[in-house]
Length: 339
Image 1 (tube, rainbow, N blue to C red):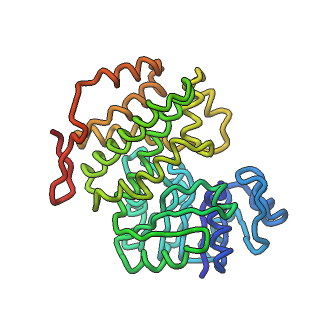
Image 2: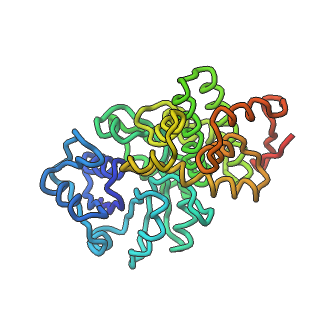
């Protein structure tokens, strides 16, 4: 099969490598011509995926017209903040879209919702889970989930993408998988703040657990298909790795802030985008509309953008009114109601 991939960052490049190793043809779009030339001439992406040899048959381009002509299967691997402007460069409607990006845009849309505003009646899939690019690129064992409202389509691409080191599970809960991918990045920033303050293991375990609860509560209120999605690879799996791995850009942002740096200082020294930074504000706007309490996300926003002292934010979280552990009920329609 032929795949056109938008985004030559670490994950877009790694996914291109995976597809080529699975026997498919790939054209990878890079925003900058010099990066496309580096991939084509040196078979490496030194900027985003150093020390990884890329297949000689992997071709890159900086011309969007070539991406449109190459394949009607389009893979999205650009930061969500650049998604809309990138989609507007594409004149031809694709037949299938596979989304790898994680976040909520400034208009309060998930990637799937943003794409639906651009084109309707497209077969859409989202792939997510604990899959840091450097490990996948090194062919280390990784498991993810791919979701589509069309179960047959999800099963088809589950088979196409799976190999001896990359195992894909199928799901029909598109919205749930997208919500997991967006919210876990915000929780990972909080986890990084704890690392920056002193690597508090008790606090971090509690944060991940309550972060999963917060993510689930929000997803159910938003209308996800199944609460089990949040216990799976896209939810708990991705949350654990993003909160604990040194590969995690979101955890790194939190760690640097916990050590006393300002958000602007941290972002100025980063080449890649930490999606949680751009997701937290629209996430809280949606939570307000849905009347969902998200205390961890709220404190992340206050620390990042309102200069709140992390110790003060933690103190406020610890002094919140006491509750039973499971403070929401799940009815037959998978909706969450506060108790």
